[in-house]
Image 1: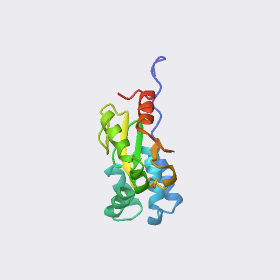
Image 2: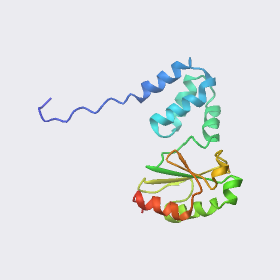
Image 3: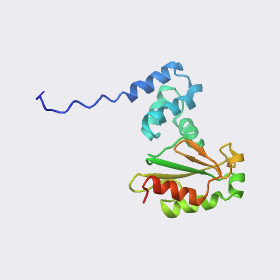
Image 4: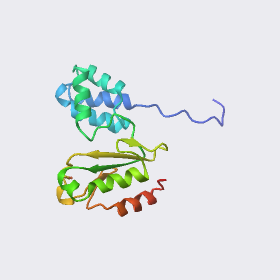
Length: 163
Ligand code: FES
């Protein structure tokens, strides 16, 4: 290798880490949710290819794996943006004004269920996230925000430089 050549890219060992997670559970179908969590942590989202590979390894029907992955709001079947806002639309949050939060995010960023073209922000909605006392609640990059207002969303969007 020439002296100034860039170092080789580190080998992508996500496949190995996922394999290790499945092996830890003896490739049991009962560990599907844990395995899907690990896969999402490693890859950011669950692609059809990944779901098929997991179904094969855990000896489960692909339809069951897809069913579980699409049932739970914390799994994503599409790549997400750098920042993700998940607005709870359960009853307590709805009554406390969650729809206004979705409208603000849709006006400023993109439709719920999508990501801005620059990949900066994803907007999601969910049914009750189990924090009704904090309504309206939003999961922002994995952390639950309490009593969120449209103005609070504006401030955060400005802070992260969302257009
Ligand atoms: S309804 Fe939103 S956290 Fe329960």
